[in-house]
Amino acid sequence: MGKGEGCQITLDQQLSLSCFTVFSSGPKMERKIAIIGAGVSGLLACKYTLENGFKPIVFEARSGIGGVWSQTIESTKLQTPKSFYQFSDFAWPNSVTETFPDHNKVMEYLQAYAAHFNLFPSIKFDTKVTSIDRLVPSDEDEHSWDLWGGTGKPFSSSGKWNVTVQEARNAYQVDFVILCIGRYSDLPNTPDFPMNKGPEVFDGKVLHSMNDDLAAELINGKRVTVIGFQKSAVDVAAEVANRNGHSFLNQISSCMFTVLPRNFYDRVQGGGLSLMKSRSFTFCKNGLVIDGETTPLVTDIVIFATGYKSDEKLKNIFKSTYFQKQITGSSAPLYRYWATVFP
Ligand SMILES: Cc1cc2nc3c(=O)[nH]c(=O)nc-3n(C[C@H](O)[C@H](O)[C@H](O)COP(=O)(O)OP(=O)(O)OC[C@H]3O[C@@H](n4cnc5c(N)ncnc54)[C@H](O)[C@@H]3O)c2cc1C
View 1 (cartoon, rainbow, N blue to C red):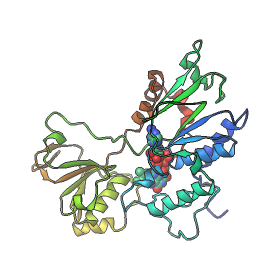
View 2: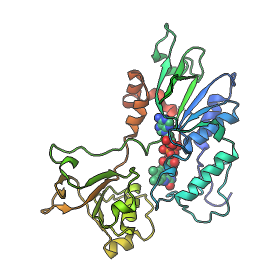
View 3: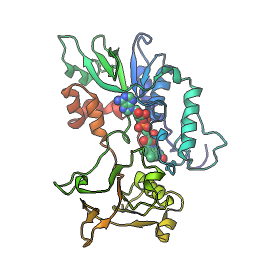
View 4: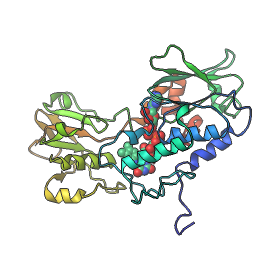
């Protein structure tokens, strides 16, 4: 182990410990496990449950693995050094020499991991889970889930989970569900605006950084405003500037962990990108009214790079209001959900 490597936590350390403690005892093959999502977390959960003798079913809404890495804009690359972003038992290939590989290389790495551990046969692609619900015998109530299977062990002799998938007639019944649905996709977090001061009064186009149509033809020659100053925002702004747009960012964070795309500040100095700090803004017909500014900022496209409502996404997947409240209220019974890979 080299200098400074002692404290590195690999992608799977948290999850492997959890899977080991959770699943290391009891009859296995007959116990059914559903894993929802085939991003980094889902792949890890699949690998470790297979390794522990189970036959998990991984439900993935998209047609491929990789989660956020499968759908990024061109300039996205790792912001964590790759030595921190690797599986403990599957190193990056020597051919990847850069410290911050781009998203294509991350995807190749994840594909190689899934192939190496033969995960693909366990994954049902294009299968979106619409809800999960705990089925309990009539003499029990769903509150017994506070102690997992009623005993503090993951598997109980009674309650099962119903996993309902889109466009399927029957639900799947499983003994244990591992949610790996991610925090940075699906449900955009966009601000609310007072009546007649939101996107509805704007003649231009409003997008979120998750939109696929941030394509060249849309952006080329347009005045573009990007809202936010975290990872997605700077990536989107750099991409837009690369395509000859004009953009500004409205929140300059004082404590930035984001790795900036190549030549980001060159673009700022060259005028392709302008940065602007503003606490709040509203929409008008031809652009944005920035708090403290006298004239509106004329723009053709506004892109919200303002993140996702990850708690709500997690909440929505539970059919029962009891479980939904566990997400928004006390988090006590959900602590084991944190054994997933988040930055
Ligand atoms: C642009 C970007 C750059 C990042 N860079 C870094 C970095 O450098 N370092 C770092 O540590 N982290 C980074 N992250 C964080 C990144 O989210 C994690 O590193 C990791 O990839 C998350 O994996 P995940 O499996 O938890 O979630 P995701 O990758 O979001 O995967 C979730 C999967 O679940 C599927 N899914 C969701 N809901 C359902 C459903 N109902 N039914 C079926 N399937 C469903 C989705 O389709 C998706 O494939 C970055 C994130 C983004 C967005």
